[in-house]
Image 1 (tube, rainbow, N blue to C red):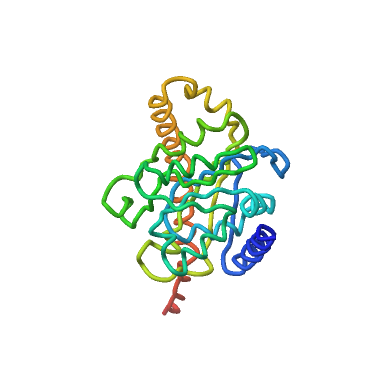
Image 2: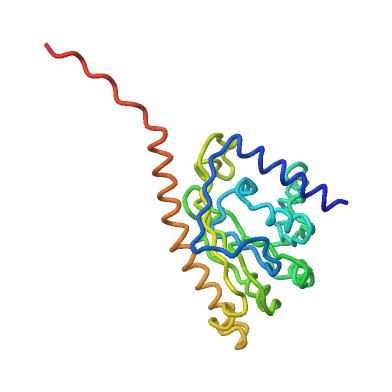
Amino acid sequence: MASRIRYLLLLALKYATRLFYRYELRWLHSPPPGPWPDLRVIALLHHTSLFEWLYVGLAPNHILKALAYRAVIPAADVTLARPFIGRFLRAFGADVVPITREKDSTWAEVLSRVAPNRVMVILPEGRMMRADGLDKHGRPMTVRGGIADILRAIPAGRMLLAYSGGLHHIQIPGHGAPRLFRRILLAGELVEIGAYKKALGGDADPVEFKRAVIEDLEHRRDLRCGPLEVELLGRERLGRRSPPEPRSPSG
């Protein structure tokens, strides 16, 4: 019953957000008809805001159902501890697991949730990009190795890579309320996990595999997300450009 209520809430939120934002979803290839019974991982690349829940506005309904009934979502314990946003974010997955910034027992708890009937949802960078393009400690936005741990525990299935165009034009972390009536752009790509792991040496040394996954996802992020963000911000500037002033009559 709780999962059904969660699914109905996500559906309501999806259609409510469409009243205030213009959405565009691009597939890098033609995806197979949904729903996808073998979807095992959803990874969002280019983490720029706590308002990434707005992406529910373009999620296919079968993805929302997967979130409501089967999703395991690791989230920062400090975020989940916030009175309002923590409770709100817990509604986005069947099992939202608080984690610290360290590879400790909380991460082991996430890995213990990996199961054939679960969908693991992760933001591989593990922290948000600020206005200067770095994290809050002034470090470059790198992919962390946790997603490699998850992939090693999953023998087969599909991974959905979601490439974000960024949300700083809507809300920059720590800079007030979100702006309404803006465009939100996302690209999607389905990857076969077994083939992906084989290509990156998933059966070899775990350290080397983790390094290969990090390099690959950072390359994909930079290749896909950068141009999406440039296009999105360019279109936003054009959309807000004021019309030219009328010329004075000659003579």
